[in-house]
Amino acid sequence: MATTETNTTLLAKESLNVINSFDTSIIGSVQKQLAPVYDAYPVLTTVIWGIPLANLIAAIALFLLILGLRKIFTNIVLVFLHELSKRTKTYYDDRIISALKHPIRFLFIVIALHLFFLLTFKETPTIKHFLDSLVIYTLFWAILNIIEALKELAYAATSRFNPDLSREMGNFILTIVKIFIAGIGLAAILTVWGINVTALIASLGLGGLAFALAAKDTASNLFGSFALLADKSIRIGEWVKVGGVEGVVEDVGMRTTKIRSFEKTLITVPNQLVANQPIENFSRRGIRRIKMHIGLTYGTTSGQLLKIKADIETMLKHHEGISQEDSLMVYFDSFGDSSLNIFIYCFTATANWAKYLEIREDVHVKIMQIVEANGSSFAFPSQSIYVESLPAET
Image 1 (tube, rainbow, N blue to C red):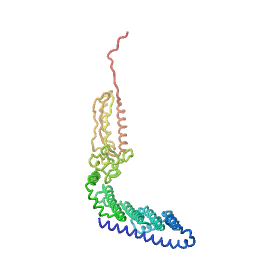
Image 2 (cartoon, rainbow, N blue to C red):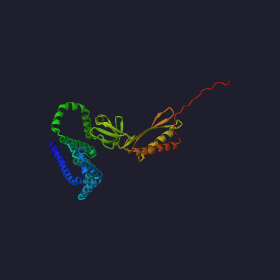
Image 3 (cartoon, one colour):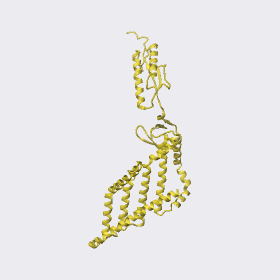
Image 4 (cartoon, rainbow, N blue to C red):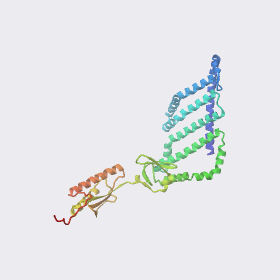
């Protein structure tokens, strides 16, 4: 890690040196151009806020010019890089170039700020540290964008170990790498401001116990994410139910799992809760159950009832949407208050929700047709009142 930090710090210093040398050459050229202006127009030597008027005008003009043309400058750089990328067969270099678009545009703003403060002779040590920090920020922003552009490589690498969890494991590794890179960038910025990072890290060790206690929930969530990845209990895109939360898994992160409910709300669940609660994974079932009771009127004869029961069973056994390898039951179940109840229990051959509804609808219609063909009908809740005698007429 120390070697990586050293190399990154050297890279940041080299970037700062390049920009500083660029700024110096530009300022020298601008000052040479301003010398005749001062001679021709002495009024421009007037000092405002400690800045010669000509320098102030030149600084503002140059700053606005760079801001106005930075999109054009960025496109010129990107076109040049895309021309170079055409010489390769891979498409990853094109993705890297696209990822550098916004950092390059921001870099021109940083350069404009450098030139503005140099022309106005206001680049104090504090401003110099601030501008150098912006350069380092831009550099590490570009590095993080490049990592994001190359995430497919991480997925390809993790698929060799576990194809089913390649995206989850890849996202987990990428998150760790990004945090590590961001930490190095922060250390480089602190170094620019003269802060001894090594001493700072050592001093943090004194509060390690307090930090560990404060971060115990974070640690629990982190180990919960490890457990989820190891158990392969959920994957992105699966329909699950965890506790009272039901929906489609959108992301399994280091700390939380994001589930999109069927009302389209995004629910964030800590990984420790997901790992320690029963998980009902609907996506991993290959079949869905049909369970129902149908009630026939008490006017149905025993012969009709048995014929209806046999016809329904035959229909289900020959239905292409019903699984023939799982339980299939049709029985005269009970004498209800107002109906003769037949119990039907079977499974569809698919777990797809829309297809399941289509198959169940077809089964319902066929049952209605069987009942009608056998001269019976469905019962509905009713009561019969028998009067033994009527009061005598007055």
